Amino acid sequence: MKKHNFYAGPSILPQYTIRNTADAILNFADTGLSVLEVSHRSKEFQAVIDEAMALVKELLEVPEGYSVLFLGGGASMQFCMVPYNLLGRKASYLDTGTWASNAIKEARLFGEVDVAASSREANYTYIPKDYTVAPDSDYFHFTTNNTIYGTEMRYDPTLPVRLVADMSSDIFSRPVDVSKYDIIYAGAQKNLAPAGVTLVIVRDEALGHVDRAIPTMLDYRTHIKKGSMFNTPPVLPIYSALQTLRYYKELGGLRAIEKMDLDKASVLYDAIDSSRMFQGTVTDPADRSIMNVCFVMTPEYKELEKDFVDFAATKGIVGIKGHRSVGGFRASLYNAMPIESVRVLVDAMKEFESKH
Ligand SMILES: *Cc1c(COP(=O)(O)O)cnc(C)c1O
Image (cartoon, rainbow, N blue to C red):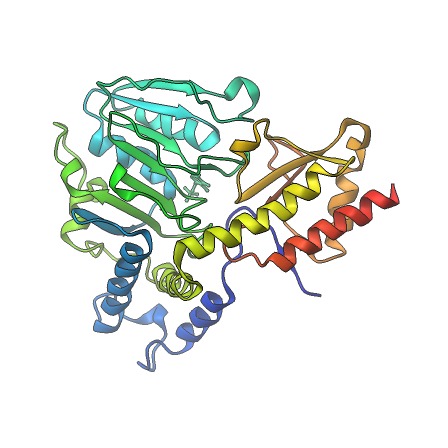
């Protein structure tokens, strides 16, 4: 049976990426060797990382003065690397979910943290809007897409301080004005590649302003100087990332991808809004994520939630169980998700509703 993969991460990747990665595991760039067993300093792999960096710059229109890095450690490593490199005295954070609050916890190890606003008391069902950022903050950190709670900031705010964003789960889903940011980071396993590599885009000029000693591996300047080759980079995920980036370019770039993503999300949100059995969990429609759609059953049908997961599985639908802190369902509609799979889910919802 055809499977429809709605997992939140690791998650669906383009077939193009998976096939080309499989091919390169057998024979990489006509070397007669697997990409798994070739030196990262070989000219063949150097070409991979060079092209991947160039495509990130092209797709996101990264201006001059920025470096693109491929690092290990996941997005969670960036929670400490950002303050290590940027936090002198004080930083501001927006608390919009679990990942944001994990980032806040790490930053507190390095200095004063001002939480500009938090929606925690409402179980993160909205994005706070009326907040001010202390102008003496070294930077303002926010999470563009809250993977667990299904809220998203699909815009680049204008604020009087440096911006740092965790874009792990919505990078490459819209054009971004990179010039507004000092650091953008994203774990690969949602919209880019298998887990193991983290994309970081950093404004070179933002570095070198803190007094503390920074361990070599945690200093962005180490990786900038060595082109992400200070130590062995995550070779296979970078190879896969290159395939995904080529595929995104082929699709017409981020404007084209954004349009497809918006269309997919509206198919599902429309079904939720017109249903008597299902309801969305995000309170302000403006905050709804187009990557992770969170919904539950109305109180009247609540006890049928587990049955629906089982019913959906009979249609090949995988990975729609909501995160334990929200419950219900979460359908992740990353870039690689075809609209046909969204329609299969919507049809399953309608069929289930008509049966009960
Ligand atoms: C998945 C995710 C993370 C954690 O990524 P790791 O690579 O597992 O550390 C952080 N932030 C966001 C927004 C995420 O979706």
